[in-house]
Image 1: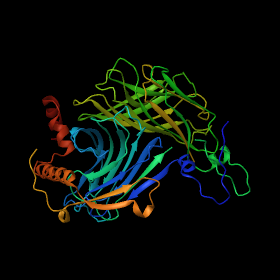
Image 2: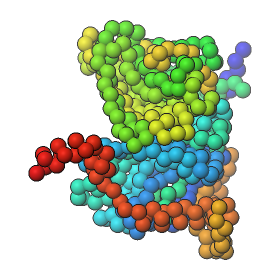
Image 3: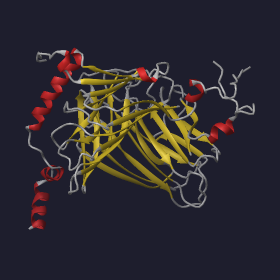
Image 4: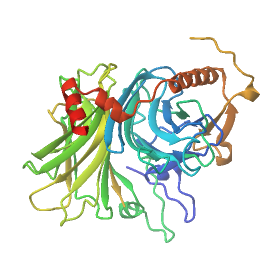
Length: 192
Length: 197
Length: 82
């Protein structure tokens, strides 16, 4: 027979109760001047992970690709596939056996304004599975100036090819080894 | 561990209706054991407190091929009413495709038994906005992809969208997922259905 | 793999790590720390790769598409643009 616990009025809901609500913020990270940011000890009690990011990088260029790594694996074992639209031109690009997989593109200091940024929405379905490669799909975009050809809309997807196992750590980095700048923010949710 | 439910201030027991009213919620998870089923179906009617449906999935089948497509049939309608469009990247090539008057939507890309590794799975999501409408024909948007090997061109990632055309508009009450060439799903294939407020 | 001279800790980039353990107090979760040796080697290699890439010519996607056309299509495009 199932026995349900009862709470006294005013008592805080338990983690177990909260875990039944979706989505739930696991953590947030607002780096400035950091080269990588990570979410570690990710609870394995959710079904899927959702990561949302928005920010800029310190590159003295139009910007840099933002990479994701799983479980601190930094070896050249990530694949990603990009589908992108710039102006009226669709294009595609793959990366094989790279040291991180792309989730988007954030503007650098050559952007028109310090308020120009990029954004990314990353879904990691069934992240706690132990017999499939960690994988993701992402939607991303940025617009770094007001002239033609300075915006992009992207769909990305990829996986870590070398190691199965649940995702317990997610690391974000800039693919050109620049830093994230102030007001950059990433939020991670667990979907129950 | 028993499921914990809080109680309201007046001492009444919190029930499913209360949970439904709180916001977006997991309506169901299906994670079939390998070799047990070639289709995963969510049957409603889905709670009327939600406005939209979202499915998040990771899947592979036992089809004797490296890849396949994930199809979604709405309301058990086997007539030629599902229309879809997708655009994806594979290697350095952007490709798009459409389906007219089919018995299911193409909603994603999955792997089969011949994928390079037994750990290669397709994954994705799809959203059906305003699923309770009985005057507007239903549509979906989603994205998905898979890597079936480690060579160039083995990746397939893209955006999918579609609509039910023809027939009478009715609330979405059944969603059935299969491979394009139906074959048993392989564990840890998982489909999760969410109601969004 | 090339050997890298690793800078002292005080001169290394910073990693921000958020501990998602629900039992950890919120105020203790976000930690900023310098890169460890493994992260430092990876960082230097990424930096070197980025510098190599920056020196390569940038090809506009439209130019890349035209380059991929057959000779026949290129001639037709040239005629249309004339």
